[in-house]
Length: 463
Image 1 (tube, rainbow, N blue to C red):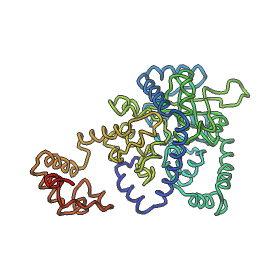
Image 2 (spheres, one colour; image 1 turned 45 degrees about the vertical axis):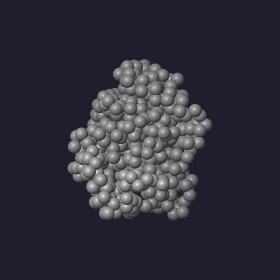
Image 3 (spheres, helix red, strand yellow; image 1 turned 30 degrees about the horizontal axis):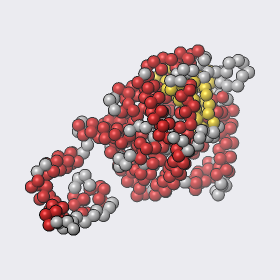
Image 4 (tube, rainbow, N blue to C red; image 1 turned 180 degrees about the horizontal axis):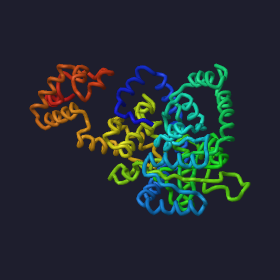
């Protein structure tokens, strides 16, 4: 997926002004997701669960070398083949070589953010391999040639009417087809793909070190078919997805589902440990697990940002974010959008490449309250902002404005003079004139300043 983060502001303005359907669709979907999460959290002692999950993931990350070695050993014992990929290029190359060695011409895929991260689909298509995204939302986007807009609901920015038009054109469904009709048409195409594909590719929600188990959560059953029907299954897993023990998995399966969709647990949970044990058994003949770094060890080495690696990709922070709701995910310019993207992307890509995402937030704190593993996203945003300021990555006008404000705030005479000038200019005129408030004030009417300052009122006695 191309990285276009630097144009975030322009893309966000374009969506807000020119495509109000995106805002309407995303807001409706995320509010519904979040309402279900809230109800589901209320059914349990969510604070206790979240603190437990935070501790487990933090322990795994701070002992990552130990658990990676253990996971590799158990996977090999189970009959899986383990591959290590330092970056996106190596990950793509591993899958390409596996496909070439096995004469693969058709691939079915489960929804996977890490495969988006490493640009896997274009590489396979370039080699003449036919790919089918089997998650319904991802399949819709594949027909549209669009990247996902949300971690959980990749096509939430699309309305039912838009999908009807797409399916009528591509799958010859009725123009007024209901959701069941549309799903049935997609199922017909995808069922043939499942039965004829030589390779199935998935991500991995979790990797249990103790048993060498790749765990996958879903609601459609497509991942179950992707991992069992083709003769080769390739699971591409970020190295941060580790859990130490099998007993940890039960809690994470439930907590992740509650955070993501409000369900006590996903409809389908697949636990992959290795290939079919005997000829004639169900399951693939080969299982390959590709462990992907691609910047994760750099994030882990960061004094603060490492906490973002606790992320379980539930999408809860996107669902509560007032900024994300205005534009959807495409405005962010890369795979991981919303609050988690704003703190994870600077670590994975580099702060310069990820600007201005750390500033694409109101710092309301709702993301931390929703996060099932208590990632301190507001604190990490402030940390990235501080680093951006120190590295001179913020606009020079903003730096100049902050310097001027600091000078005025520490000099009472200048502060009083600035206050008198501001009260005469008026709120909106002053807002448009100030570098830091110009864009914000352009769309809003600012409050009218008081004719008298607080000091004047204080001297006169406040009634």
